[in-house]
Image 1: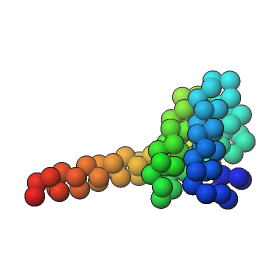
Image 2: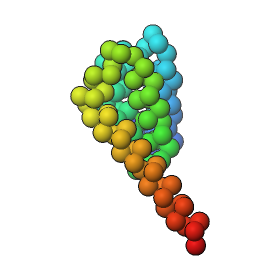
Image 3: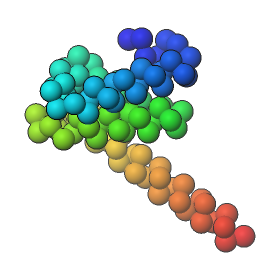
Length: 101
């Protein structure tokens, strides 16, 4: 629960630690079961783009493990992933529109 109580730099460091642990095949299931999955989904919806990117990275690492795929969907992770894909497409459209001027 430390993740959302401190400044952005502390949040970034905690999120990076979660991502690093989640990338290890030996810790994926434990990290998901200990709340990392919910936190990753929250991060992937954060207003801060760096935290959002790290959250998506954590989800990507966790999604490699077949046992965690269903919990990701059950917790709303697939919606968050879809929103971030759409968000990126929206940014590309906005950038292209500005370049056309």
